[in-house]
Length: 505
Image (tube, rainbow, N blue to C red):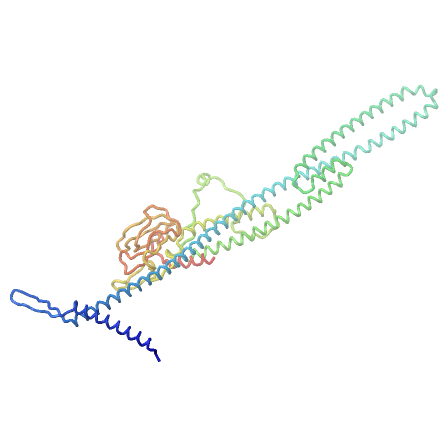
């Protein structure tokens, strides 16, 4: 049970509330009283009586209305704050998507840089093959000269042996003549003549020796020159210098050099095989890329050959009936190794691969000018290309584009690089932008809220050209997107589906 103190506090609170109510009633009775509004005209007088109860009811209605408006305003501001938060999240997602597109463009540039590097390496390998062929010819010439010097040595050896035999015979004759000096004086003059002839033979032999030495020196200098030319062959220079110092082992060193050359030829053949395999793989990949890109372009309904750059006018000799010639090298030939000349085969492979890479670069250049992506990052498709019911009259009509719905003032972006040819008001389209992408391709963007480009301006892929709106003949915020091929409308859905395949690739 409550104590006396608590009961006293409760009675005090009750009395205080009662006093406040009495004061409010006094104020209300002072301000809110029965009132009369008199309407007087020329002949009649009317009186409108507003009772105290009616005034209280009107005051209560006004209080309730004011409270409801305060609550509604508070709710509106809270909802606006939530919408701003979600809009910021969508902007972040759009920025991430743009970063992904930039990464794709960087990847394409990296692939093109790798392709150019491979072409430079092919040229370097071709130069190495030519140098190796010259070195092989120089080595063959050196071997021929070595064989000639060996033959000359074999010719001089019998002459030396004959001179040695004559000297031994003369010594024996002189010994016998000492014993028979008195009886053989008459033969001294003859012997002197024979000695003179022998001296002449000695001088001739000495001359032959000096000529042989000069020849050997000349061969040595020629070997040094050939050794300097074959500096790129591993170990060949040291082996040939050893052969120059040790003339008796020329044949053995020549055989060693031949073994070394055969080893180098084997290594060069292996390098050619690896190079051929790399070129074959690169050619297969290039063919696959060509086929994939051609399939993508064919899905848009465009003629790929019409999009590629045309060759220039024929040379003057061709126009005046001049001659033509050269070996026949098919553009897309089988890249498997054949039994013919390896250098010719590699040149043909390089020519074929270069032609394929050039065509792939041309196709990539044409592909960049094709509008394969939507002008909005996110949208709802409201109307397709083709026959439909007119949104204003309800009659059957032809629709030459796509109606893509999104919040008003959403950025509208160019679907491919090009030049702005129209930027202004066009009756049914409202504010419209038309872009010429070259090769007979144009795109239109209608019902814009604002145009951010001017006529003649160059625009890049995904560059903002305006803001989405509802200008012109429109029932709500959207962008009317058209694709024109040689002036004729084409279904943009074909281009968007092909763009999805590009994105997947």
